[in-house]
Length: 104
Image (cartoon, rainbow, N blue to C red):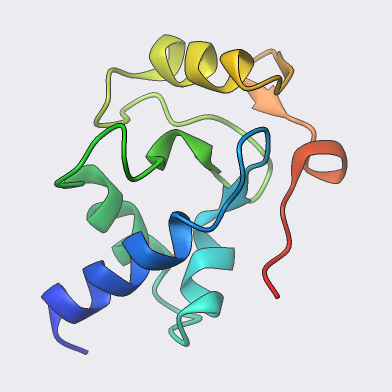
């Protein structure tokens, strides 16, 4: 899969995640038909060309943990953005049962 097409698919799917919900890297990878490419999803988010429009802060790891090295400013910035949407963050993690979003 060509990177620009892959990245565009990641961004397109992520834009469907509603405010107040989160998804995992793996969920995005599966949603775009590339189930073994969760790490590449992370890289696509790291080079997000439209921060604030493409809501990368809504992506957490499979355990619901926030990303400390996130492109938009790190753990605290991600936490603030999620909390502003009503997502509760406790000890650097989100309850996926409560705030997780399911595609389709």
